[in-house]
Length: 251
Image 1 (tube, helix red, strand yellow):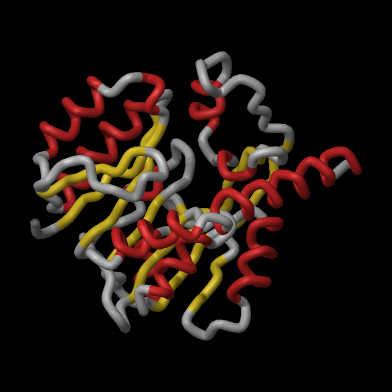
Image 2: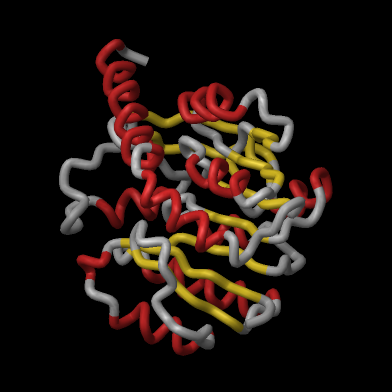
């Protein structure tokens, strides 16, 4: 890594810490949302933990957390923030359809959009709202699966998946439903979200909702069907950019 890249990475991590850990109102909204899925003593998986804001929220809800994060710089931040917490287990690996290793495309200046999906990087190229984003490095990282994490750590009450266009690969490594999960979508890669909806349906999920961006507020007053969620996503303006779709076994 060059000195310039290291400096860009440091600034990117500092930005992430400011954005994701610096807003108390945002934390309260996040806690209120996740309290609907987690209670004291539950287990949660944070897949794509980044700088650990969801870990913090899950812990405030009383849940134990298994957090998977393949970026070394982000993993260091998580160890600094949560390393002494026995309720947090950090897995320094990507999560995908199979165990082994994979290539991670790192955006040093904006590490929250680092990804294992080459298609996601292509989709961002030239897209409105993604100007200036550069994936400047590639690193090979260990990979595991949700099934392997469950076998090792137990079945979680909730799984959060935020891996920038690689969400379907993560879900393809899950062969058993858990009570609830979420996966991120972006308007530059809607096809990934459609495939995730279909995979969730295959796993047995029939109830869906969505929170746009970082609002931490559900869009629908009552859960939607898969087809309703797909139609909503198809009609969503490009400028909406991203959000999280929630899949639940019960309404």
